[in-house]
Length: 246
Image 1 (cartoon, rainbow, N blue to C red):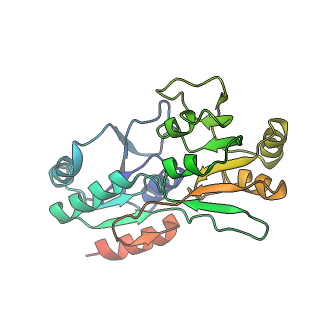
Image 2 (cartoon, rainbow, N blue to C red):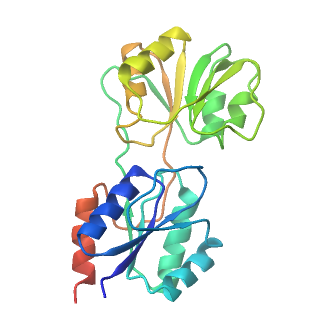
Image 3 (tube, helix red, strand yellow):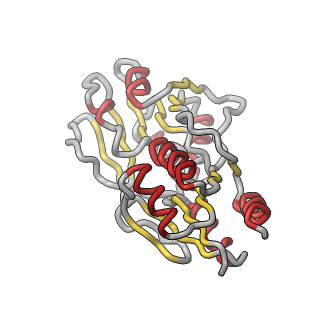
């Protein structure tokens, strides 16, 4: 029987991996956390919802006889990665990570690096007009700043109320450079706030900020458990094939 591979998904990388695993003769099952409604769906089987923590994930790996698990979750999904590492060790199942490379500053960039969203909110000077693109879960720290204003862009509406000094912009990537530049210029954006998620679909905002000499408050990635990590599905599949060969 072809080896079964559990993918912790929710990213474009996870969708591409599922399709390529099918082509390579594996049987992938992609697990979606259910955080985003109407997500783009990968090829192959899909499971939605949590596992009940690391213990539940370990039990699932053993009961379903998975040959390997791939953490292809978002670079900022630290808890998922921690649970995956614990579960893989408990179930004695190989764990690999597929993660896009982070963005790196280029000539002309004005980055202010911070460890988390509250620090990013605190780094905004009084009177700043910011474009904040960190998602809906951590936006409250910015809305609490009555002395700044701007645009909060995210895919879905946040749980907290949006203050009058902020505009909510619901959009899905990809974003084009011309549109990003027009958004920043049209709303007199003084600062861009983003997470270092990496990838090409949302990179245009960095180029637009660079061209307009707008400072970027960059939230750095969380530290994750040390597991074999790959930036392309081809590299990962080659290693996976070698690990699971008889």
